[in-house]
Length: 250
Image (tube, rainbow, N blue to C red; front, side, top):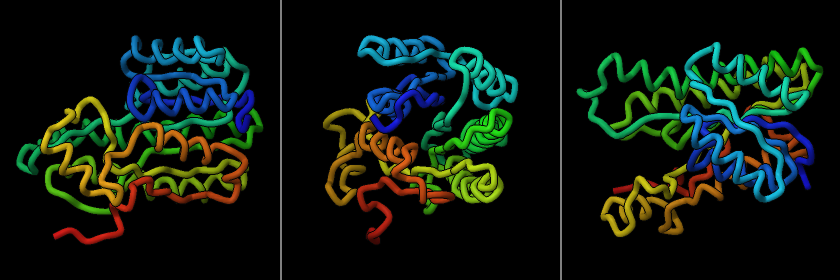
């Protein structure tokens, strides 16, 4: 197992990419701290891991609140003795026109998708340095950190920031032996996109395979990035987009 006994926090672990990644990391031997704004779903993910023989606990946290993230880190160490990494995955955002992007909405998206990632990097790295742990931080960016599209102004601003924060944090933390990397998913197949819906088919057509990406496909790449096999990958954001970014659309 590539991650035997590594203590890893996953935010946004209650569903989608976060849940799939939690299960995958646990299957590779990691001890998972499942965290989500929704305590019930965070607990459910931890119980799913435990039922398969893995080790997991859960902590509710709102990633936009410094006190919640500090508590998440402290509870992780109190329960499991250390912290080897964090997957800053929690995020929000929907499709709405620029006119609908009120200052309040913009601030909400930035507070979760950008500030929340900062808090995860800051508090996790601070604890790693305190413990002398050479750990790994993985962030969730997006294809929309590289390109613009109508209807996602705040989300795109936040995800572009995550790409640059990943680079900057890698520079800041390299001398402490802490790697910082990110993934940039394409369109993910979730229950929000209904089967047979024209919009789902449209999104699928934006990928080279003509299929939506499964959460488990993101989980596979995140697991690799946490592993020693990715020791030379640092400061980079890895697109997991099935070719979305490589071709021009009409």
